[in-house]
Each structure stands twice: as C-alpha cells, then as structure tokens.
Amino acid sequence: MPRINLLPWREEQREQRRNQFYAVMAGAIAAAGLAVFVGVLVINTIIGHQNGRNDVLKEEMKLLDMRIAEIKSLEAKKDRLVERMQIIEQLQQSRPEVVHLFSEMATAVPDGVYLTEIKQSGSSLSIDGVAESNTRVSALMRNVDKSGWLTAPDLKIVEVIKDTDRDQSALGSRFAIRARQIATAEPGEDAS
Image 1 (spheres, rainbow, N blue to C red):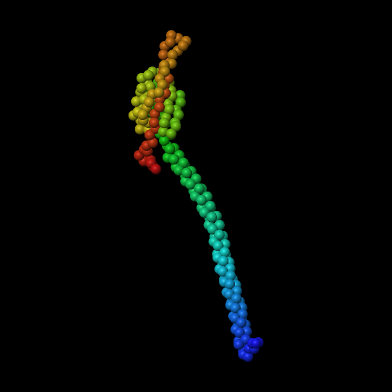
Image 2 (cartoon, helix red, strand yellow; image 1 turned 45 degrees about the vertical axis):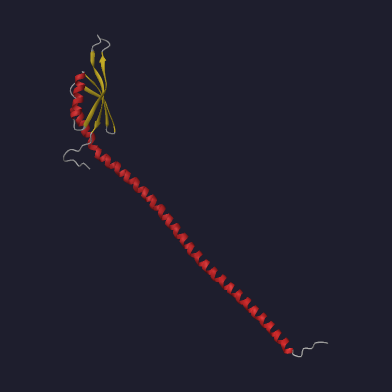
C-alpha cells in the first residue's frame, strides 16, 4: 500500500529547519570570517605600530652610537692632551735641575781634574774625565758624595795614562764614575 503523507506541514517544517540551519551556519561562518579578518587587521595594526616604534628606536640608537664614538674620540684627545701637559710639567720641573747639576759639578770638580764627558740617562749620571793623580779622582768622588744633588758615586774605571815617548812615567789617570742625581728643590723654589 502506498504511503501518503497527509501532513505536508512536517515536510515543510523540516525544510524550514534545514534552511534555518544553513542560514545560521552561513551566518556563523560569516561571523567567524569577520572575526578572523578583524583579528588579522588588529594584529597587523599592532605589528605595524611596533615596527614603527622599533624603527624610531633604531634611529635613536644610531644617533647614540655616533655620540658615543664622538665621546670616545674626545676622551682619547683629552688623554693625549693630559699626557702632553704632564710631559710639559715634568720638563718645567726638571729645567732648573740641569742648572743645579752643572753648578754642583763645577764645585765638585777639584783642581787637576778635567771632565771629558757627562751623560745623563734618567737619574743616572755617567762622568768620564782625566785627572793628574788618583787622589784627585778620590777627591772628586768625596765631593760628589757630599753634594746635595748627586749621590752614590761608583768608580767604574781608573787607568793610568803613560807617556810612551819618555821613560814610561805616568801622565795622569783616565776615570769613569757613575752617580745618581737627586731631584731636590731649594728653599724658595716651587717643588710642584
């Protein structure tokens, strides 16, 4: 027996529900797509804003790096100037020492002693010369030891000079003395 649906409203209701389901499904898909689109736009806007801030920071970092390099070069110039000033100050301080040294040497050298060479290396002093006798060399060493500007005389070489033309008599003594210079300031002079 054939079935006849006498109630077509049920079929219409099913069709309506199916259409509603599809409509709700399409609306949900559209809403989800819209939410994803809005989310992507918001995230891209945030990323773009952060990239802009990063670019500003990079530019500022470049400026700061240039300033740091400039500061380092200025510090290097300052260090070189300070070194030059210290050298000039040392030269200014040691300028009177040479005068005092020669003055002391003039008073320390006894009669009969002739200096041939004086060398200074730092505070070390090398004195070479000729004396009429060994006692004059000893007198020179005592005078150097008593000096206020020289100290620690050390006799390195004493050799007798003989006359080869005559009867081998001694003409004098060749000597080499090492001493140290003491840097002292005299009263009334600026010690700085």
